[in-house]
Length: 227
Image (tube, rainbow, N blue to C red; front, top):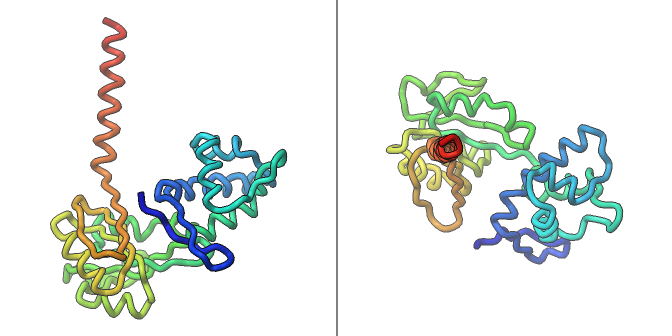
């Protein structure tokens, strides 16, 4: 298990397991909802239920961040919300570049949910001459050959791959060479990157296949139940 190293107030490093980091956005989303409802404090049980995890796991996850709860009172929603947002970099805006502006890339560029989470699509890049120079979601599409200049001018550190699978490694190589250190890969292919570059993969077809597996099991159970 790898650990995310984040600083304590005294500047020393703190290790947070990857599994915990993956759940922090769930807690933040739940806290945002509680804030919108006007809730000032909440128990670990209430927060865990809102986030869809068990209370023991939530308490253990939050223990990696520090001690923010008060026995008998619970958590101050706004304070915990800020602490988690700070921990996962949501107290500042992050510019990203999307490489590949086909159907998926275009849809991602128009997704309004990014802006509410501190993510801003700052640049669009493609290698198709027919797309280069066009405007999508108010952004002019740049050439892949200009990626390094685009990343440098906008101080971008996060890239999104939204290309066909066969182009994914080529694009990943360009992103790394341009100085990108975090990549979200939507392409149906694994990419190899050097140490120091983080990659998260989102494969929609695999997720649908997993759901199909569960549907098949449910259908089988119903058949056995009526036999």
